[in-house]
Image (cartoon, rainbow, N blue to C red; front, top):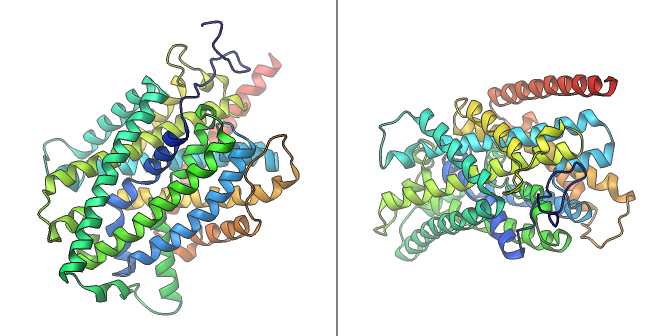
Length: 449
């Protein structure tokens, strides 16, 4: 490798710092936007009824609380590995660190699988239904892996293009909503209609269940911290990027939810894997459904691309922290991308893409990340005693406390999620425990040798 090229402590080429402030903001926005709002809006409506905006508003607040904790930690420890790094520094329990890292990785892969399923659903159905959906989903994952192997600059630039495309799709929805309001169309009474199957406790659990599923639309900002070693001046860049990203997407989501309920009844939304396409068809603006379907396909592609990127960088970061075998940290000398990590997560994603439907995979993603978010919020408080020699953002103490409480509530059975979500997550954790045992045995054997 060239003599001037920076290297890690293991002798591998260091990751290239190719992401500037503006690119990072678009990365965060593109990371959050995508599959959640384009594919699961209807399923959230099925849980809560016409008051579709309420779960997204609550999810927005919960996301902001945890985002503040991530901003403090990434500024304090600007390295790849994210939640796993923070957990290890806070608790110094390698097993807990591995489980958190594994849950983050699995959340990314289940999210990518949900995106792949969304890609092969009703939106693609506007064009063709010749190939089996599972085959389309697998080919979709492999194509994204190839982009990721090409390089982070190429991947993030592709993300920028896709982000602008998916923003245009949501702009279409908001324009349709504005036209409907001025034309007096739609049913405003639906916006206050809560259909959770009861009152009192049932009402609370129904709203929490809808919020937990809707929270899938907000996940993604945590992925960006795994790009810390590829970002210019991360301690200064991340606070603005994450807060702007969450604020922009949260506002868009609440407005899109309002428009969706205004124009389409909740049962119609629930029955579609392309709910926003139903909004386009119901609107008074003559916008081609096929064009919107194409935009939606780009949107879910963006979600999957970023999740594959996140998971591969997580592998790289854990290898450098000696949580995974050193081979996971291998980097292509010329492209400076973590090729072993990319191949590893691609194989797992191909395996997951044939399990579950969009709702189940999306809820699994939310559950896993809500558990991780609770740990991250607690880690912020524990690590207050650890001082660093550079300036970084410090969040008010009340925010991580509220973040931990709300994350635990949404991850609990109070959220009224289907049993298969807990079963799927439990199986993934058992796999993680098995991998932990294998890795420990390999490391022990190497030490004895």
